[in-house]
Every structure is written in C-alpha cells, then in structure tokens.
Length: 302
Image 1 (cartoon, rainbow, N blue to C red):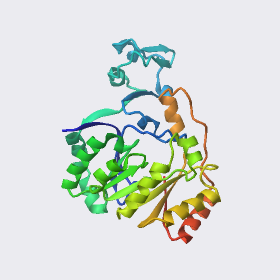
Image 2 (image 1 turned 90 degrees about the vertical axis):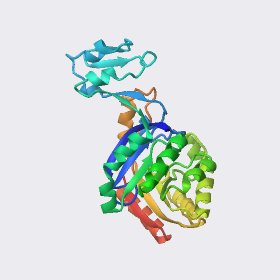
Image 3 (image 1 turned 180 degrees about the horizontal axis):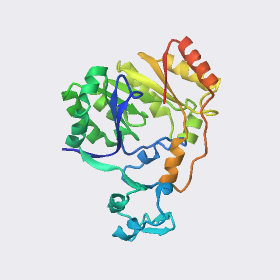
Image 4 (image 1 turned 60 degrees about the horizontal axis):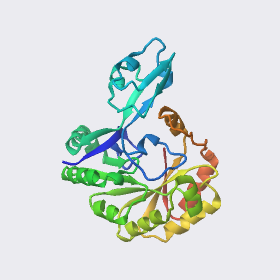
C-alpha cells in the first residue's frame, strides 16, 4: 500500500473541524509563509530538531553514538553537520533529555489507520472525525487519497486543511472523499501574497471558486497578522470575493502566534523569520463584526 511522510498526530483537537478530532500532519508545503507556525512541515523529507535548553553539559551520548560523526558538542552547545547526518535517529534514541528529535517518519496507510481506530469512540460521541493537515497534505496526493479511501470505509467524517495551492485536478481527485475543506486564505492582494508567502494567490482563489461552484462544504480560514491582512481594505476585499461565491458561509479567524519562530531555531534554519504580531483583541472583534454583518458565520480559533 502507499506510504507517506507525517510529522505529527494531534489527538483531541477541537479547532480543526467539528467535534473532537484527530489531526494527521503530512510533510511538505509549496508555500513559505513568513509567519509559518509549522516550519517542520515545509520540507517533504524528515529533519532533525534540537532543543538546546534541554541539553545537559555532562552528557555526550549523542556524540559518541552517531555513526556518521555528524554531531559535535562544546558544553551544552551542539552542532549537527547536516551534510553528514543521515537521520538514522540513533541520537534521539539515546537522548534521555529529549533534546534531539527526528521530525518526519515514513508510515503506511495501515499504520495511520491503526492510530485512527483508537479514537473512533470520541468521533462517534462528539460528531468529530479526522483532519488531514500539514504542511500541504495534497503534496502527497497518492498517499492522501489512499488514506481517504480507508477512512471513508469506516464512515468517519473527514476534514482537509489546504492552502489551495495545487492543481485543481488534484483537489477534484479527492474532493468526493472530503466532508469539509478548511481552506486557507492568507492575503487577498496578490503582490503582498507573493511577498509574504512566496507564491501568487491566483491559483488559490480560482480553486476556491471551483470548489464553491461544485457545492463542496468549505470553511475559509484566515490567519490574522497585524499590519499584513487585518486592515479595512484587506477585509473588505475578502468580503467582496467571498460574497461572489456560492455556498461559502463559514469563516474561521486564526490569530497569529509566535510559536513558529522557536521551531525555526530548533531546526537550525539559516534565516530566522521576522517577528509578527497578532491584531489586538479589539481589532479582532471589529473584524468579526464586519464579517458577521456581511452575512458570514464567524468563529475564532487558534
């Protein structure tokens, strides 16, 4: 059966669709949002992360066990030569302080289904289900489709969190197996979208329009970032676009938080992204009112 790379499984999620859910995070994303909350999901392949504060000065187990001599240490300062590291995870296995971790593992459809079965009682009782997120889950479309087929055999509600930056053929290929699309709209102005995410939003907007025309269930998710997409013009452009579509009624507002910056440090990314900020509580309430007055059901998430 098909295999894929996942980097996390989050149980008892309540902000990724209706009811209590289990969210499966697939690795790989074509966007490079400067405020990304899950930078460990950007690259398709596994990566190693380092939590330096957990490292003990008197412990050198990771250095001694590494078969590639890729790890060096000075006090509690660890350096990993990524050119040598083959992600064998032996360092992770011996690190009792959990300072080292390989993020991303290859799994089969059956392995994921075994995890999903553990939580089915919670789905049944709460009206919840499975959410596939990332990264961008459609970057592993063959694996995703194979998973969707098995999940639907169990009569489990499925939500798909997507940036929409994929070919519509890929979206259409899996759309009948998805009960709810959680569709990210980051910035309406195309030039700003290119600046802050690295890609144009034209394909994203076009794909959302096509999903709406086909009557698919869609909740639009807006990551609110102060000074980027929370101004009146941005919100009004968003309203005008969504009002031009059919069947789009739900908007989820997701306030920016800075947790992603710490993950960039752990991944030893060459360039740390700039610091962004969430809009004030008062501004978020103003945006909620604008959207509600425009006829949308609005929910604030995380």
